[in-house]
Length: 417
Image (cartoon, rainbow, N blue to C red; front, side):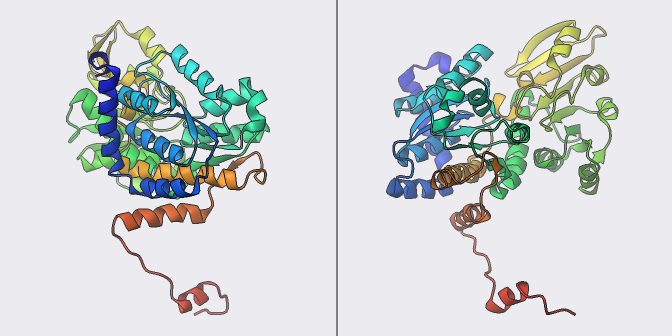
């Protein structure tokens, strides 16, 4: 798209896509209206490392409405939507990112965003925050805090906290109930299937669909595949999650066993080397592999490239690898985050809650400046529930309220059988 459009055309396309996403983001719109009045972020510089999509553009617009200036950079080389980049630039944000950029350009974006000397940081995967700690400690004195969007990033930050190297407070937005239970499950489930279908146009119904990992993301992918009448298989290392998968109606086996029967494979663990060469060489001819974890480490792509007799792109975001015996396997989106590499990421309706959580997290950091320890914090429950209540309101859904007697009962200990 960007190769045949000039900057003005890209801006117009970006406007249309961002407005379309905004229709499904009413909670963020309500928070934006409030920010216009309260101007919580007046004079503040916010650096954002995130997927540069139309949903993220709406988050950026909300923060600007609250008085902030933005520096934005991509959190994945293949997830950037070029029209959104041009739109945000036209509206005054400093944006670095291009669909398909190489790793050097990706790193340049991190350096540029950090170089704006931010007061607040939004990260998606932990690259921005880790760069500040490794290379720009001179800026830490001005950083009020950060907010981390995804499971992988939260894991990295908790490791930093454990090692005593985290030097400012960070809110684990990923751990918000209105993020984790919806974005990770329903968003990842639908968008991952969407990415696979766009890349392959293959029938899922009747196929053996293997999901590596049964956290919330894995549950979402497995549920969506099962809903399309796939024969779902789950691999796990955690006995409790494996038991949950079995009780949810999925077959549970090792990846070694699954490799021989699977037609589709999706990794969702946040760990490395989930699908290794030893698995790929056992797969049937025509097997399709995708990753839905944040970083491109879940599939051992280097080993695959070295072992393949030949490699060629066969469709948009789909590469064929042929082994010496003539058997072929296909990898979606270079082994990167498939729902954003070959599709458009999560539906706007779930990002509505996730990005409302981001806004409230940054506000919480500002209002509690100097009072939070240099650790990974969860957002207060009342803010999480506020997002849920606003979402229900925009959906036209009402819920019951506790009566006085019910409140008394729940807070008493005397009553029994």
